[in-house]
Figure 1 (cartoon, rainbow over the protein chains, first blue to last red):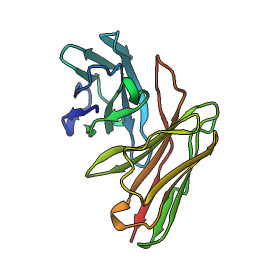
Figure 2 (figure 1 turned 90 degrees about the vertical axis):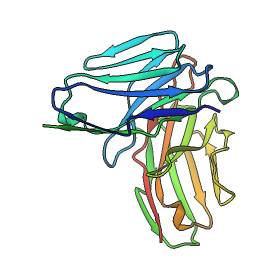
Figure 3 (figure 1 turned 30 degrees about the horizontal axis):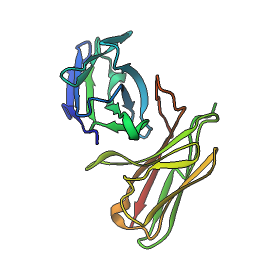
Amino acid sequence: GENVEQHPSTLSVQEGDSAVIKCTYSDSASNYFPWYKQELGKGPQLIIDIRSNVGEKKDQRIAVTLNKTAKHFSLHITETQPEDSAVYFCAARSGGTSYGKLTFGQGTILTVHP
Amino acid sequence: DAGVIQSPRHEVTEMGQEVTLRCKPISGHNSLFWYRQTMMRGLELLIYFNNNVPIDDSGMPEDRFSAKMPNASFSTLKIQPSEPRDSAVYFCASSFRDRAKNEQFFGPGTRLTVL
């Protein structure tokens, strides 16, 4: 089955700096890659996603890049703000018989210091 | 829309007791997922349903866990008997199965503590 590795596990930045979180996946048939943000005491919430036919997608201060050949994708947050502090999860959607199933990375705890 | 609704939000029980977690998915969604989140194992998919039918239950840890979806607007996850190692936050999520996108909307979770 699919295996998703996420790095780093913790990331600490100063307000205004950029933050980058990286993920790799194992199943070349995976075709959809969402990123979720989880705030304390809440469920994960989708912040951005990318499909396998696109190399990059941007939404205001966040962007995601995908390298299908290398099977890795990254989340970029620019001009970080304290409210960006949360746990971020990457995920990959498997193809084939497990269609629809998301496999999540282990999560990255992002702390933005004012 | 109220989003995915889970109950109870917190549950404290003693080892050996039966625990039932409940979920109401977003109206119109046809896929429902149960996850377990712990510090050690992260976010694990336990089981998911499509059109009320269980599709993949390979993540259910053992026979003590069971899940049902009697109709499109309700699902339960039952643990019987419960054990301390079952303590975790359990999330329910729902989505509209679509080839182009698969956004899953998560509920607020149920924090389970088994003493």
